[in-house]
Length: 405
Figure 1: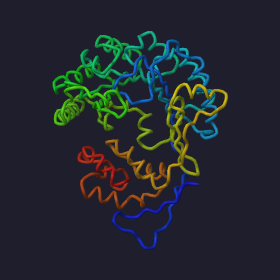
Figure 2: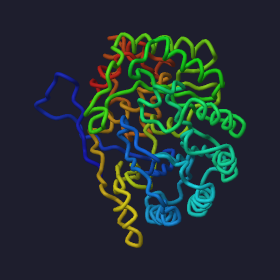
Figure 3: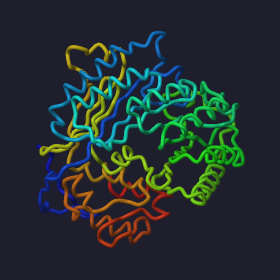
Figure 4: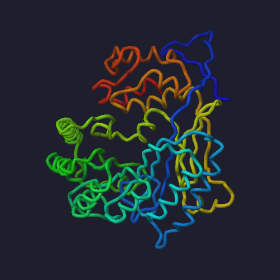
């Protein structure tokens, strides 16, 4: 059973504890499937994802077999639930052949009730694919492509360790726009030696293709990466990065994009449904090396992670021992975990989503919510029903989140 929890208002420690609250899950929670492909042509020095340099001969057929075996072993935990979105992430999923992707999607539909309207995304890098492969992915059932462009400046791409150049990036975007109704462009700002004008030139170049979805991230030096060990010279200061962010938001708003999440912008009807499920604390099953999952049943919420090293994951074939860790999320962590995700969404969340996805009544957070409203971090979009972070709340998100952790 889920851990019982007692919610105590900040600053008050009762001598007689209040009622014990146990999460109660009585309504269906949306379910997504995440597929991790762990290989890249070359690992970028800023990347802290579970990615590994691809071997000369990718064990593609065995990998597909093992992913389907992994999914088969996981079925009892999601039995009868419909999958609303599928996301191939990595690594570089576009290293897989179109035949492998087709075989995987056929296998998923055989094993699972996949929604006919499911959003199915594949991440791709311009240096690994061409127009012919895009067409093959589309024919296999991929209906959304996410391109890791990062920059259109060749010097910046070289500094980031990317394997593509400006010309390849442009060719890939043009091919994607011909093949997919919905596609995303990923861009990075705050790059070594990057000025505000240089960052805006990259942003303007990306917007010239009118991508239905646009994601923009600031380069950060993540622990245990080559960039963290040897930071690049001349990184932009905080004021420069803040100016880039302000100009970015103005440009996107002026060209019809909704800034719907911390780093994501979309034209109407093109928000990423898979990521929205993460951010509203929906459920997801993760298969593949290092893939994370979060699943809910009547007993509570559990998190799991597959073995990170491809060698160990692939070596589990035939045994079903793909899971490296599996643990319950304690009841007293549910509020904080929900808020860490949902408050990334600029439009916020509804009270009924909170109750459905945490299994807890709104009462347990109402006091902290009212205090955050009083302090200017939150506001009601629809009084009593939908709550969202204010501009101050978005700018100081970590400060806001501390109230719920």
